[in-house]
Image (cartoon, rainbow, N blue to C red):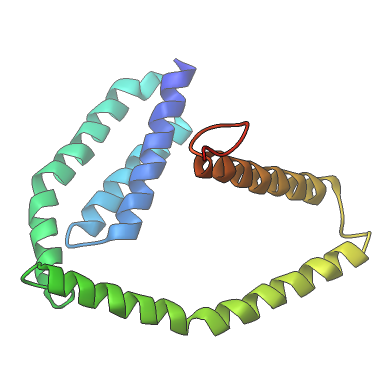
Length: 166
C-alpha cells in the first residue's frame, strides 16, 4: 500500500508541475484538481485511496478531453515560429541561422567558463566551505566526466576496447 501511495503522490506532483509549466486555458481548473489530489494524498493517504483514484481519473479525463484544443490553440498562437513549407532550403536556412546564433554566443560562454573556474579556485582555497557533501559531489562529477570520455573513446574506436581497426 505504501508503494502505491508513493506512486500516487509522485504522479500528482508531476501533474501539478506539468500544469504549472504549460499553462493554457484550462490551467486554473487542472491546477486546482491537482492540488486537491496532492493535498488528499499528503494528509490522508491510505483510507482515501479510492477517492484519490477517482480524482486522478477526473484530472486525466480533463487533460484528455481538452488536450487537443489546447494543442491547436498553442500551434495557432505560435504560427509565426513554424516555417512552411518544410523543404530542404528551409532546413538549410534554419541550420545556417542556428550556426551563427551559436557562434555569437561563444564570447558569453567563454566569460562564464572563466567565472566558474575562478569560483572553483576560491572554493578550493577556503577549507571551511569544503565539506563532505561538496567533496562527494565533485567526485561524482569527475567520475561522470571520465565515464563519458571513456564511452566516447570506445564509440570512436568502433566499439572495441583494445584499439582502432585500421
